[in-house]
Length: 156
Picture 1 (cartoon, rainbow, N blue to C red):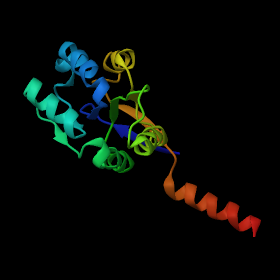
Picture 2: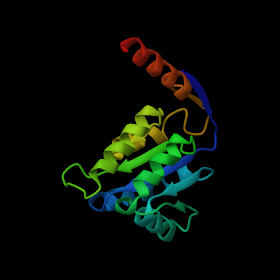
Picture 3: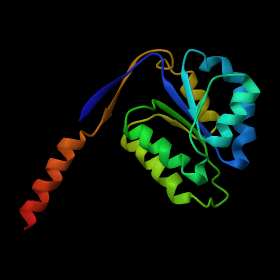
Picture 4: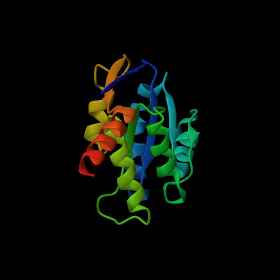
């Protein structure tokens, strides 16, 4: 296991499927001040809506169906994202469902706290870790690779 220290100022990803964008924005109406002092990123449309509505700085990836979920997953794998707010739509199939599943998988693999609903989002922003450092634990990729090679070699 590898311990990674997450700083007080976090990089936070904000993403919402079309049918959940209004819910995320209504929640942000009440909580946007909590994000001051943190760096924000998001997928295409969601980040544009947040930038316009709150006149706040937020970096944009592509939209989800155009590769934004994959870009976000890559950023998580590079330890560039500390928290993920992903209001995904559980009632409607998305054309990029495999990308959504991959993003959620990589968030768990890299021990990223994820809020998928208003309740989850409230828990994250009211956590003692919100404006403080914390440690996350991820599998060491080198160690994992060596273990897999050794395991496979035993089978030969």
